Length: 152
Image 1 (cartoon, helix red, strand yellow):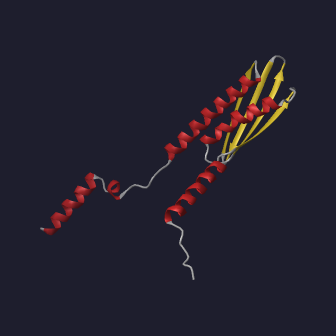
Image 2 (tube, rainbow, N blue to C red):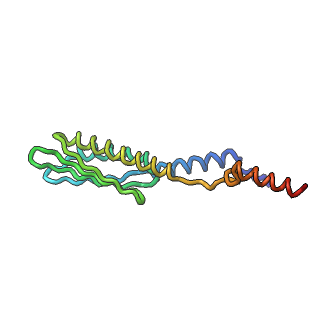
Image 3 (cartoon, rainbow, N blue to C red):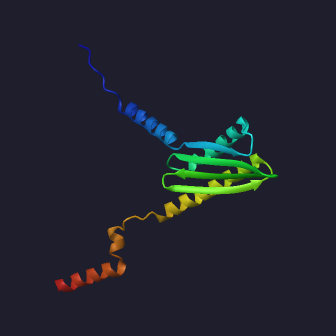
């Protein structure tokens, strides 16, 4: 009877690492929807918006939904974007003479807001104090002196 070979530990770890990487990539996707108001919808603008707004996913930890509204008021090209990811909801508005410029400006604004929000979340994380921190120097020396006095 042929002996069954066990999979090597390195091979098992490699498969687990690639699975985790795939989950991270799948988790950090942005679903972009584009709405046009008083503008003829074009595939070029839609693809450009999806490409630009799809990049904000790398700053987020969860999948995101971005809703972009592009419109025209007389000679002004207007844009508004709302990004939702978990409990985070970020919105921005821009006005310019070119729709592509509006998309670029909106992407920059949203990226800045997300970075600032994530920095605040990281700064707010609190860890439990260690035993050394709980017994600070004055308290630790007081405990040592009372113990020495009791021994005498």
